[in-house]
Length: 151
Image (cartoon, rainbow, N blue to C red; front, side):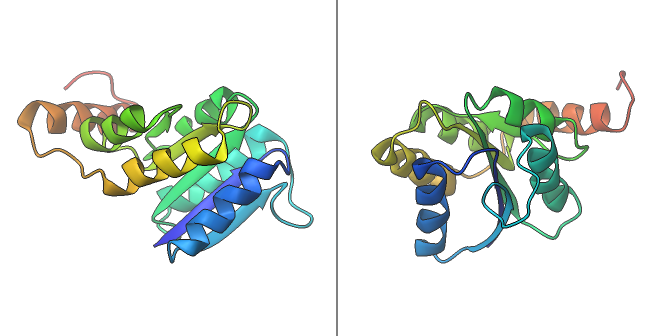
């Protein structure tokens, strides 16, 4: 899988994330502080990673900043992106299952390496739900992406 990864800081957990993704056999497309000459502003690098998901050059993305909040906000401004800030494995599983999230947002401050492993395990094991109500909610988000506010 091609995974776009961004971080606004070159922190140990960000480097561990890249190594973990490569160790799982994924092609990593780095942005921000993870790429030489990349713009490390959280809004810029998170948008770049999210755009690769939206345009199909990446299958998923992981965006990081100190709290994870800014990275998730910036990523969610890109139409077609459903970014979820996950601080634990249960939330990561639910984001994939119920929200069909395609971008994982992480906090560089809160995420330890053992927790990172748990979150990634849950994220990659999660499958989007086929439940009608769950699909209707994801479809509603797609409509919102297109600037419409009514079904």
